[in-house]
Length: 297
Image 1 (spheres, rainbow, N blue to C red):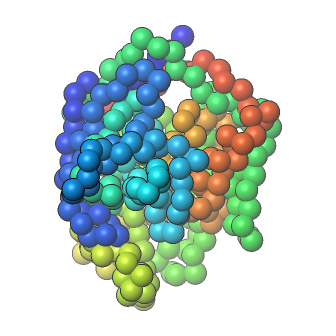
Image 2: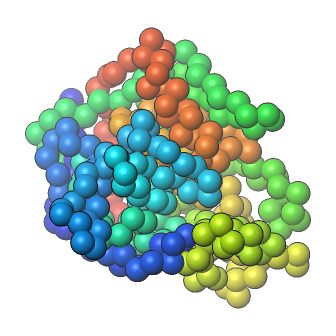
């Protein structure tokens, strides 16, 4: 039997929201077994924190980021932080914030990963279970699609394709058998990306106000604008996998199966998470495989 985890001490982060541009402080704290991942949002002049569970049924928007809602309160751009927790195999944590958007940091999950590893990962006295996919579940939107199918090897196999007309991106594919070690080394540092010709339009509707070359890969007609270039030759598709991991964390359990995606994004990712939960006859809960992590901090 394998067991649930949390972190050994609180981890603190500060930054600005990618879309709001608003400064925010975040503290990730240990949580008890079976707590799952929960946001606690305290806004100025509020009576106290509002708890927003990181669950697929709380998703209310997926344009350029994933938004959760509880009552009248929304919390935005949750995917990179959730990816860091899920990628490291952390099952339980309380996320305290003094603003409505998770800080973007450097546009990847790497700063969160470093802070969480420094805080330590501890085992709890409660069994860990995963959702084992027994038959395919597929979501489509035009020619875009995402599906999860059974897979013999325990764990999550991701096979992800993107296809952009821009010459600096083009067609990219990665195929990863996810593990904490692979997430840290091959996925966590991949940054969010966007196109310069879309930025003005995004800002007109209140998005990307905190975006810069310090926290996103920006692409213009000539190519990548960031002076340091890319962290991976195929950084864009790796970031899509990072987003997928964060969005699929909203299922509430790791998924044992193969996830294939073509030109997908937050909308399809979260639709698949909801479809899994809405199709309980397509899967079963089983004891988890080990997820020990040996990474230097």
